[in-house]
Image (cartoon, rainbow, N blue to C red):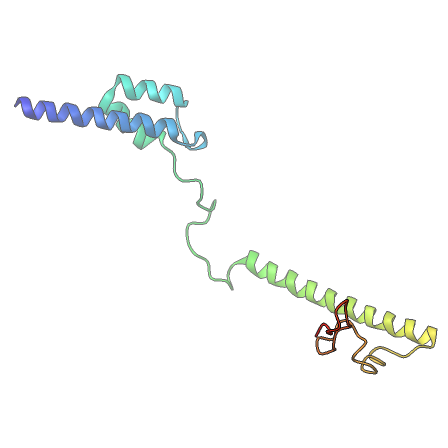
Length: 147
């Protein structure tokens, strides 16, 4: 009988310490009912009942659950997802129009200066273009070319 009481006493102490540590380390936004200090007082002065009250009443649920949504919604039923798709389509159309306007502006600039239009003259001398990877490099201080 003494062993059983000793074992129960050890279990109560371990449970109480665990409840106090859990209460002390839990995010304050998840604590319900009382403030953290009062919960620790209740857990310490009413060992078993205080710990049980802490776990069933004082400890709130997790914060990472989406508010108001308890089930998975298919993409075609999710209004926010569909709205984002519409926004993407509007943005893609706007980008397309801006690219067309830029192409028209490039064409007007070339026509007003009398110079060649876009795309003309780019392949006249591939060796002189700095962005051509096949062009041989210029010679440096050494007699070897940078190829």
